Image (tube, rainbow, N blue to C red):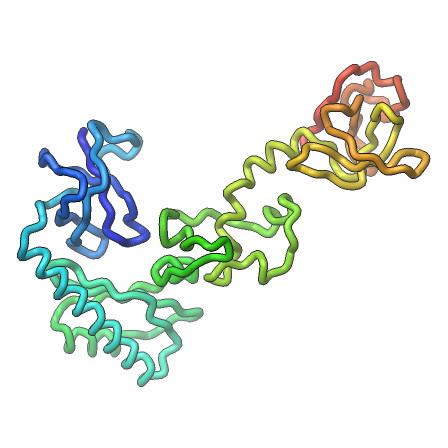
Length: 300
């Protein structure tokens, strides 16, 4: 099935695949498509002879038609309506003292409805507000409560990396993020450093998390008894990216050793489970393990 990838200029629809229904669309052409808020104007970014994600085959929205001069003129009117609706709704929210912040307004291309996106920490009774909006704009009104991450994606900003926010440019789904991911990457646990513009943990903390988890599996835990060429010692710290550990030897010297250069390592000293490669005896002395290479201990 041939598809086209289009952009509506909206985060949740950036570079999404659509079914052209047999139309031979060129890159750069503007088209009218189905969206979650109704019809919308889009631009073709690329075309594909087959849908690249076969797991979603049949779930594609449709390209309705090529955009006409009337559609382009209507788009300008839609933008004016968006500005007017945002100003009117914000004023009414302030007049009523409602505990909500308006984040975005999206009229459908055919003006059959206007969707208002807002953020609030509590439940809001907006029935009277909806009545006023319907009387003002003479169309169906839809109110959608969104989270802090969605607000950031709609408003946009520049992150500490100097680039546009990921949620504004390409990120479509927000995967769970935990402080543990920052710990795994040896980052400072300063909340102001870990929080994004939305006030939540930065989405980019997850990007390299799987790599850190993979590298950690080949490193002994802190507190583990290890054997290096210099002798027996205890792991005091780990450098995940360098794949090395800081070992305190029996004579109190501390040395940095690559995990691949360790002769043997076992579980932490407070772990009562038998050590791998030691015959389950629990003890390990220099040269007594009978292993010539490093044996990884699963960190999980």
